Amino acid sequence: MKNFFHAFELLQQRTQLGKRYLEFLRVPAMSVGFYVVPAGGTDPQKPHKEDEVYYVVRGRARMRVGPDDQPVTEGSIIFVAANVEHRFHDIEEELVVLVFFAPAESS
Image (cartoon, rainbow, N blue to C red; front, top):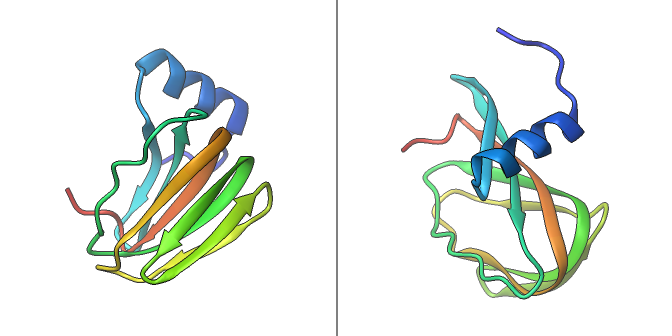
């Protein structure tokens, strides 16, 4: 199992694979990945069975979590409980987000 990662390399790998989400760490207790949504894009997420924490690395948008709706920018940290409706919207600048699932995301 790998213990050290570099964000630039992971984001480059995600781009090469053409994926919106690239998981790079998975253990039973959690999984971690990068999620990217382009400016003007839409976020197709549906509620997950796991709790999540999002850390916005860069970008600018709004995020709705249940009834709450807030602007998010670089440095924002968002908690989403399992099974709660959530999504990014009004994405003004490409959004790069580090996502932590606990326990590991199920398929």
